[in-house]
Figure 1 (cartoon, rainbow, N blue to C red):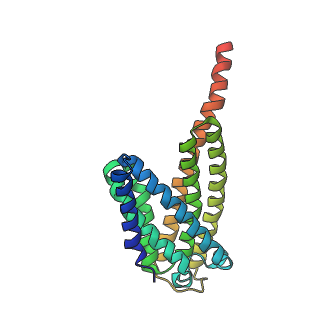
Figure 2 (spheres, rainbow, N blue to C red):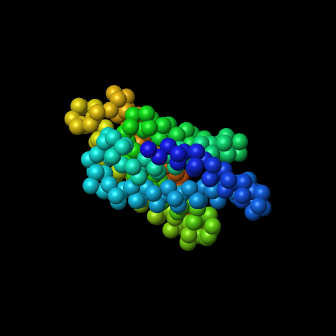
Figure 3 (spheres, helix red, strand yellow):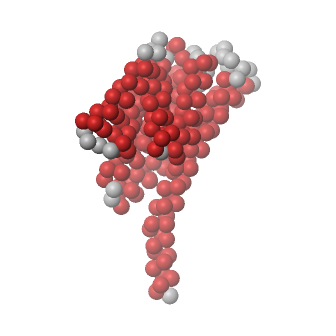
Length: 231
């Protein structure tokens, strides 16, 4: 339906990177960061649009209704595949810490394409995770103590919403494994959906706990050290 979006997204992101690098005078990391920011914003907008457009289907049909019923979600999925194929090149060469994240993302989108399900659930996953990425990118631009506190609080709240959404997806999976779904799909699709959702949740919660721990050490650890010195 929108398969042209895969090479279009890959080509656009590659051209943006080369433009920032050769014409904008940015270093490779800066160029990649700017392309990532572009992806975060576009993917978030497309994800929110898909969620809003098919809001009546999200609660019950997001995981296992055919992707063909949700063309905006398919467009977003193909846009994401093209971006992650582009960015995996950068990650493999310069920034291997995100390699696992990218493999999870590509695996999730690819299995959704093969099974023709989980497209709308992926759209919801996308806008929630991209909101978090935009929060972090905003903090990196401002880089103040107040901005960091705001980022950690808002990011944690958004991850709690993501956890609630993940429980809903796992409920869809349970119904599918019990044979209670009214949709047809490959027998392996529920296992892939559950694995992807749990993996995404773990990655996001790990990131949230990492920054909560840093925030705790920054403020409460400082207060504890000051109290110890006084004693």
